[in-house]
Image (cartoon, rainbow, N blue to C red):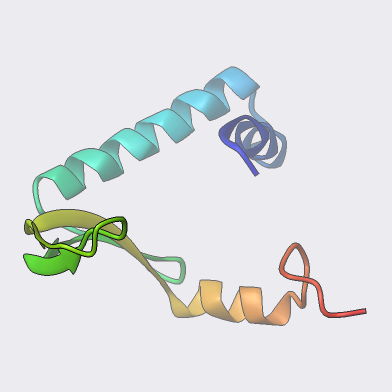
Length: 102
């Protein structure tokens, strides 16, 4: 699902125009982004938590040459699914996931 389809679904389920649904979604994304930039986390009980994790500096290897190289520390956004989301996905079966062998 992409943003356009998500906006259509939100508009339909909330009985709002697509313009209003897009404005709501954009505002929600902006608030989450700004909160993470400040180093705070966003918790939506039952859905999950957005937060920033510090990735430590580490040593890696150039896959082409095999030479060691230093990978600097960085901050990365992460999402941890909440119990409600995990349970809903687990109960949903194999919809949209990898298909089993025939």
